[in-house]
Image (cartoon, rainbow over all chains, first blue to last red):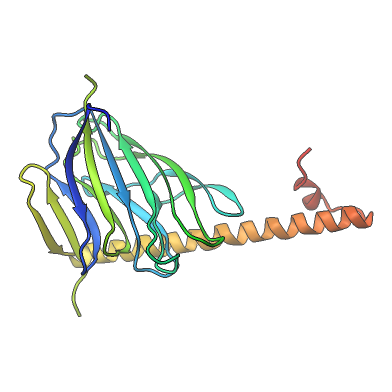
Length: 161
Length: 77
């Protein structure tokens, strides 16, 4: 990572799994935030991943593609995670960027990522959205249909100088 | 039955704790999961219908048969 990226926190999901990963008490000393993650869910068919900022559920405009189609949707989906039916020991990869996270205004964000599966069922997506929360960002929560062991997320703070 | 849990990482102190979800959080999680599944089912149905239309258009072109307007729309010109 460039030297302007500072690791704020990192979580690795242990043997018991978890429903979500929450980063709290985020320092207000950076310009932007970058959340990088690798996920595998407990659910057999659900690959949806979701983001909450300061407890607010996001509703992004998502453009994503599968093995056979491309579509645009507006729903509560933020990104994709590997379902438990996917090839063993594989995880999705993705990142979410939140610029100007301390501003007293609604927060734009962007997502890009992909699942990994040795089959036709695989997703990659680009999403962008506006989170209707005008408070400075102090928490970010990443969740899905149960996060399996070895799922991980790392939060970076980025300065503009 | 154990309740779902959340891993909380305090970015100031570095402390990491495991917290049980509240009833409201569990309900939100279920709501999100169902909403995604419904949207995904609708998207898949639309994709399957488009695939079928394209296949029909191709077969008709090969057989020299007229296409419907819907089938013709699947062609990239």
